[in-house]
Amino acid sequence: MLDIRDLLVNYGTIRAVRGIGFNLAKGELVSLLGANGAGKSTTLKCIAGALKASGGSITLDGTNITSASPEQVVRAGLATVPETRDVFPDLTVSENLMLGAYIHRRDRAGNRDNLERVHNLFPRLAEREGQAAGTLSGGEQQMLVIARALMSRPSVLLLDEPSLGLAPAIVERIFEMIETLKRTGLTILLVEQNVNQTLAVADRAYIMRLGKIVASGTANEIRSTTDLSAHYLGG
Ligand SMILES: Nc1ncnc2c1ncn2[C@@H]1O[C@H](COP(=O)(O)OP(=O)(O)O)[C@@H](O)[C@H]1O
Ligand SMILES: [Mg+2]
Image (cartoon, rainbow, N blue to C red; front, side, top):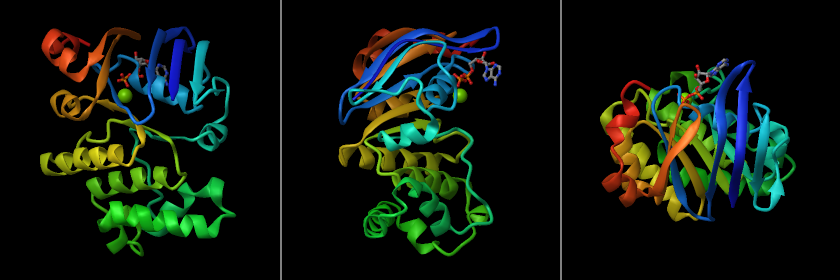
């Protein structure tokens, strides 16, 4: 479904991603793990079209999206939830959600159906549809940005540290929601620092360190054969 090969991403002279490759089959939940600064967000931004690749290729369901713009990537069926968790604070929950449906703006009936589906997945957002997004709690804002990404009707969803900075009970809910999304058949790439909870829901995982992939395998293999603490100490 998503195939990354020999990907290189630079910030000027800083080589943040140094020739990585990984893939996701349809319906898989794959995790990208690694310490701060490993290059995880850079990888996601590049797949999303927000950063230019200096080398390598990104293929989505057979389509080469390596040089695609962010809007072209969304149209190709890939939505990204960045770590910045940006909502439009003065717009209502509903208005924020409808912005996610921008590429389908002429398909009002389809958007209505999809909004209903998203409200069923996130009943809390349905209750707050008229409320300004800036007045939601951190966990609710995270739900909103994920729900907004779903309004583009993606086949692949990239999530950058959705549990970051949230209270344990909310983190639990976010992981439950990710499992629910997986059951709908969505293909998911999950970047996380919450290693144990992530390996509990992921099919497979890749570990990044200093711009490279240093380990990969099924969640069970990673848990039993990889000294995870080594990848989280000292960056
Ligand atoms: N806008 C930027 N300009 C220059 N260097 C950056 C920028 N963003 C990230 N980097 C550097 O790229 C490397 C990878 O960062 P990042 O992808 O954010 O890592 P992660 O998400 O794994 O924590 C780090 O060394 C970071 O300092
Ligand atoms: Mg990051």
